Image (cartoon, rainbow over all chains, first blue to last red; front, top):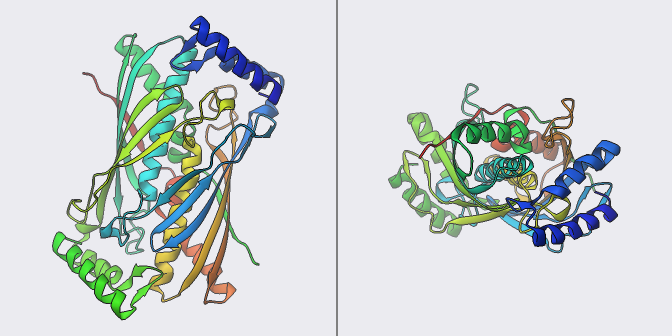
Length: 203
Length: 203
């Protein structure tokens, strides 16, 4: 997980691809090497992810994502800045220049459950052929508008349906679904309280 | 908020733009018309947002977002499908084809706090000139890897810094920061528990 071992990981990856030792596109040797490196030095597990946002107009704003810290150092491998626009549809007074923030929550949850499922399946040697998932979140606008103390601002609930094709019996696929929820960072962030501290910078 | 009143809202918008009655790019007349419509018919406040995700390979997967239900009907105004890729950087065994799911959480939070701030400022008649914000989330990978029961999977904490330029004293800007947190759907989703139910579809 240090620069040196990350490089080793990438070298292993090339070797593994040649030797067909990847599972689900995940380098399982690198995965177990990462776990062993963290056992020796738990500080390598500490990551910090970052985002910078700028308001454009109305419900339209833009986020840039690039730098992060992890595995004991600032990342030096990411080549591009990822840029995403939030906006609201017309009925929510926006101009629909992008998905809205609560839709991005569904995207984040979808990605994290899927990756958690695929990585942990790889660790168990289960080959996945296909994963599809659908997400529905119910939200009552009276929360955001401050019209009722009995209505929360966020999703009242989120329903997820997974379809998985894999070389495994249905019971095993159900276990993988459970494991994805048990290990997914975004599932944890959404289903449990995560502290957020907001400060106003004075110039 | 019905199809008819949404159309009225858009008509008002044009009029308002001509008459300079927009604040912060938000049609305040339409905002108050929405609140009044919901007072008469609370069911108009009910929204359902959706996403569909497909796994590609390893940590790479893709979400499509388009349809939603709100204001008493299926949306008919959104013209395009928004598509976003999740992936992981090399150190997290991915190929960096997109931001990762926990980075998208920061993007969603950034957008929602900003829009909440800007809309509620508009409702109060406070003109905003600029809003910038930075987000940092601390995450210990031992949670995802299942290496420690004492480490959570998601962010241990998220720190947010806002810079706001507006025609208002600093005390008012602090109030707006507080109000954004009090009303933001994504802030609520992250800081409070949100129920998520996952099921496996059997074909």
